[in-house]
Length: 165
Image (cartoon, rainbow, N blue to C red; front, side, top):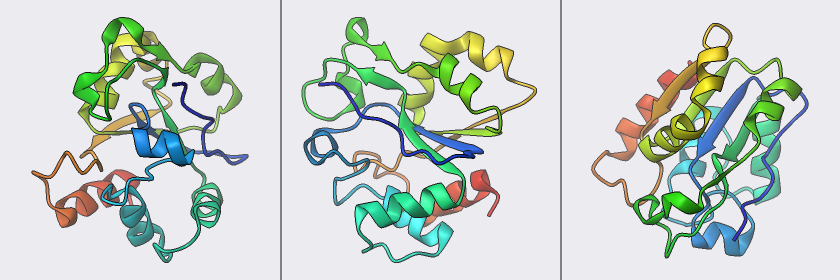
């Protein structure tokens, strides 16, 4: 099932990249829709909003803070929601070359976990190399409930540091 468009404002300076939306996110057409995914809790702590805001309000906060949210993959075959189940031969990457051209103000890319970083580098290594002087690349601990070996406070600390807030 294809993913969906990014959360994106006019002047995105930060791009947060997941790998591919999980089943619940795809069903709800919302990034990080699984109630145990810590993404929106982390963002609420960092940007000072109520975690119980509507999805539309949360996405507005991200846009207001010049943060875009997207996924590396536009499409893939994956039974369930685990990144480890993504069938490599079916990976279809979003058009990052066009995205970077359309958003020259982008200065930071944060990968939401190791899988997003690994998939991006597998398909877009030239973009990393060509933009290394303009863009900082950083991996944060995955917000997925499957990544429970890192505590919520450890994740919050790492994400705060990456976003320099």
